[in-house]
Length: 402
Ligand code: 3PG
Image 1 (spheres, rainbow, N blue to C red):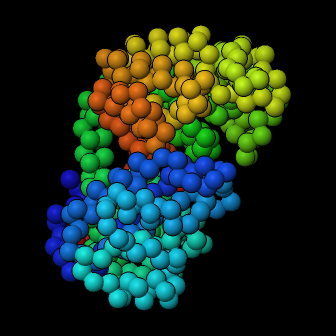
Image 2 (tube, rainbow, N blue to C red):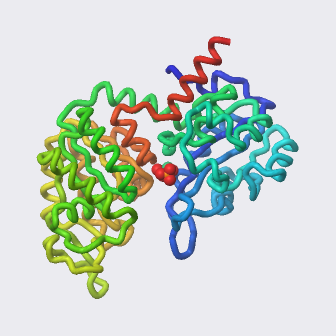
Image 3 (cartoon, helix red, strand yellow):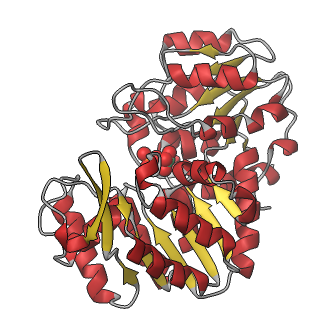
């Protein structure tokens, strides 16, 4: 590997910054964490960091979004998983955080608050500029080593992801190491046709990545589900009313341009399911009424999508096809996952929701690679070098040339 791993360092007695991604789905009403697999994954590197003083940093949600919250609940889940006490600090770069880090003893673990509380963590930088942010300047003095293990956010050029790595000896954590090895292995044998089943709610990010995927030969067919499918349906005029999503006109016009440029690549649902009087009701997509929410794919769409999946050489599925947590609307997500699991293709499934769904349906063993990463994985598959991986490669070159 071109990047260093934890085994390249003697971390005993050292103060280590461990950047993980504990960004979990949060219930918008109770603000409780709904699904914890990313927190569990975040503990993988800790076994190899025994005897070090470990300062964990993560973000949760985006400023202004409903899932933006502090890390207190994550600390509790982390303690349950590890079966030991960790120290949660309601601070990121202030004097409290600095004092607590300085007072750590070997074997201590601290969890900092949401890194996005620090304004700088919400902006993209070059690695040299990221290293000049106040976050990196203040905290890097207290750390000996930086371990980057937040694969799901490896596509972000934020200070905690690329800034510390510019000034500290840095390596990949266990999760990043495993993802990079496995994905490199898969991508060297991946064969066409490449079928991408794309859902999820981060529409702006997905639209940017789709074009790259198509242009780089990684998406011969794109089967759309979820909010992004609705955007394309609006662009085609099959849904005639606004969807009420962020930057709607901009994304609809981008979708329109993509359909024009690649008319044979995209498939959208022909039938869907909504909730009427507490029950599932299926209909042609043009029959949906204003204000109704699409909760699932209908059977015709699922059949059509399954045919494509069966003839694929490689399938990449990201984002659930509906509100699968509700029994009435799990049909699309479960059927497509079963189709992917039973296909002869090389299969990659991505995102926290689908990871949970695969476990729920007992299908995880049948998938070649499962990743809790969403947008980062989509970008990785386009062939674009992710900022975190770039930062790790540069850090390895610097370290080896010393
Ligand atoms: C994700 O869930 O995709 C990562 O945690 C990155 O989150 P972001 O899209 O808010 O940067």
